[in-house]
Structures are given as structure tokens and as C-alpha cells.
Length: 135
Image 1 (cartoon, helix red, strand yellow):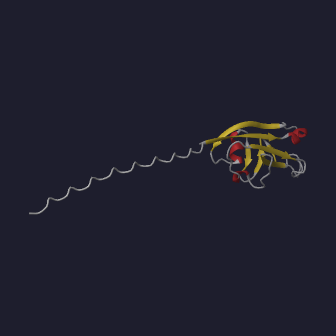
Image 2 (cartoon, rainbow, N blue to C red):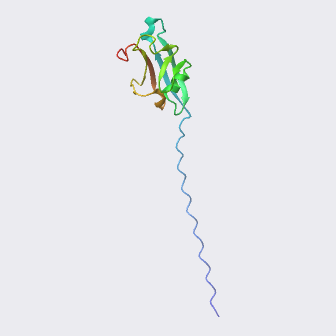
């Protein structure tokens, strides 16, 4: 006679699954920046001293150029070079006049369409009469 087969050992309970890591907060779909267009150096030529001053909300990844356009002021040129804002164009007030921009007081030195914003920046467009020497 053979011995009865031993009953199989019970399966241990599976370990509980670890709690999932909390998902990172999604990046905001929009950001807000302030834009100021300083045309005060052209006031003696009959132009307004401020062509725009606004806090604008733009999509995440927007550029300085996008923020300027979001103010509603007319913009001439392209995202790589702004030639006019609000009808005030380069050379309107002399051979060395035109637009420069600053982000948080810093001049990046490249086109406004290449400067991506992260939110909270202060953008100032300044009309110069002397290639920036008067800014």
C-alpha cells in the first residue's frame, strides 16, 4: 500500500502592490507675463510715450514675440526681427532708431521668437534713437 500524497502547502498571500508614485503636477497650459512698450524716446517726434502696458496670458512655451503680439498692439516684421510696434517703425526717428527688448532687465541678444518664456517674466520693448546707446 502506498502512503497518501501530502497535501500541497498553501500559497502565501501575494505581497500588496506598492502605492503608485504620485504623478508630477502637469505644467500649466498657460503662463502670464508683463509686457511694457516704452516709446518715450520718440515722444518728441509726436509718438505716444507708451504704446502698450499689459499683463498677458499666453500658452506654455510662448516666446517674447508671442507675448508682444498678445498685447493687441500692431507688430511689423517677424518673430526674428520686430521692425515696428504700434506704427512706430525702425528709422522713423533717425538712421539709428529701432526696437530693442529686455527680459527682466536683460538683453538676450537674439530674436524675440527664439526666447521661450516660463512665466512671470517682465518684458520691456524700448525704442532707441541711437542703436541702444540711449537706453
